[in-house]
Amino acid sequence: MKLAGQYGISDRGLAKICKKLNIPVPPRGYWATVKSGIKLKRPKLPKIRKGAPETHTVYTDFQAARSSNNLKGLGNKAIETITLIQESPPLKIDSPPADPHPLTLTTQKNLERQQPKDYPLISPNKQGQLNIRVAPVNLARALAIMDPLLKWFEENGLRIKKDSEKISGIYALIFGEKIFFSIDEKTRRIDYIPTKIEKEEQKKYFWRTYSRYDYLSTGTLNLRIDVSSWASGFQKKWSDGKTKSIEDKLNAFLIGAIKIADRIGKERVEREEKQKRWEEECRLREEKRIQQRIEKERQQELENQAFLRERSEKIRAYIRAVEETTSDITDNKTMNKFIEWRNWATQCADQIDPIKNGLPFEE
Image (cartoon, rainbow, N blue to C red; front, side):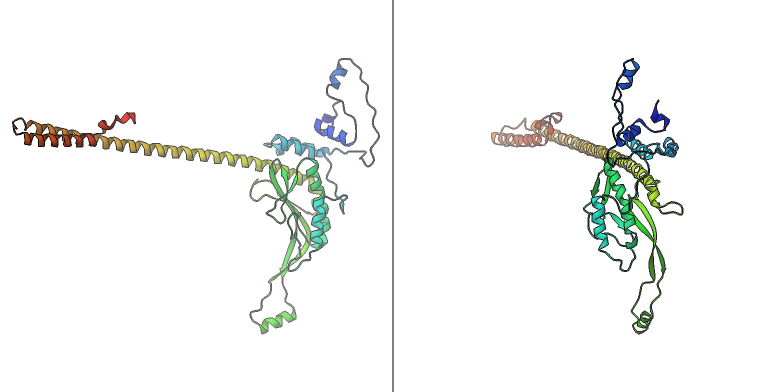
């Protein structure tokens, strides 16, 4: 009997349940050996370990969602992790948390020392704390919500890390992406009513002003994924509602975090590929520009060489013309002057003649 298929869960999900309940599972090749006719001894069911769970409930109402298009386009790791969440019971909330996570304890110590001033909410004032912004009366509840989330991330190989540049810079590293998350409380704004003394002071001191509004704690909490504008179209906030509180939505939050991490990773790869294409286009444009400049310079040099060649040939033609007029000279002194001039003129022609300085294609 294929139990995984019967209960609508994956083979890996069933194996995890068996491991959790300390139930032996067949080793690799077991069923092939049985099929061949060989009888194998089945191990006895071991005794339940102290404190270990005795039962596991499979929440089959998740299976329709799993088979729908809500996993379409996700990577294999994301699908595998979301399937694991869907096949698991809702996260258990303990208030106060049993064996609290170290971050839960440090944040609790930090926030318990704070008191609201002009605003009803408190938030961490020290680096490396959970991003919690609630009224003091709701601090215990917020910590009780955060604690199982921290434990789930780490139990499933997703590290919790600190961003040193932020006060509340705690994030889960999911598939290599930083997923910041927080809890905040909704407040209600009301008009501020000055006291009798404040009204008298305002009459006496016209420059004295007071806040226009007061803000009240509502007890309504929001669990958020803080990823700015990335992964548009994905749910990033889970709030207390009329029928369900955010304690009932922690599995949905985890699924949302996995989906967003998968999308951010894809968007990052797309941006990197786009950047590479842009850089390659820039490189090709620059290469073309350089080639065009080199070609223009070569053409200009060619024209210069042709011009100089033409000048040198004109000088030589002039030398020949002068030489033709000296055939009747008999005076040695005059002839020597001509020869001296001809040598100088020939040298001038050779100096500007580019061919005399080497063939242009041999440079």
